[in-house]
Image (cartoon, rainbow, N blue to C red):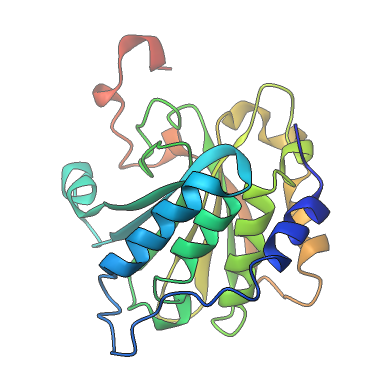
Length: 231
């Protein structure tokens, strides 16, 4: 498995001379849409780009306090699944930056095509590390963690049998919320992922860092799971 970030840095540097397709017109920051030209660019990149270890899917949602799981799932929108470095950058550069998203909106980058839902069969036994950071730091934190995820830099930080399933950023009124999803909450104490994050983002002061298993959330709906996935 390729885990050396330098390999990805080389791939990224090869894209610096490529102009990303961006509309000159203002875009609706609350609900980003990929223009047709961008979709064509992404499709082309996916055909000939440097392959990622696994595919990753960009998602968007808007959280509404007090909403049910069904209401939350209805708000989730899949943006695009990428399987190459170039495809990743094509999507990243054609959706609004996190600093331009409205409050309560969340971006997710999830491994393969798993949905950013606690009860998803790939997530239901897991949890996430939550980190709060200043809005001034959010764009850099988001970008760095995305690169760490697709470059599998976080893989060596996980216990055997566990994996990073996704990265999320939620825009809030004050500090923004970063989440690093893992597949096995019972193994999270063996992980050194937070040490890795601090090493990657040495200039960032996180105002809070904690872990929470999904099944401990009051809104977790275990009845939606197949019997084989229930605790």
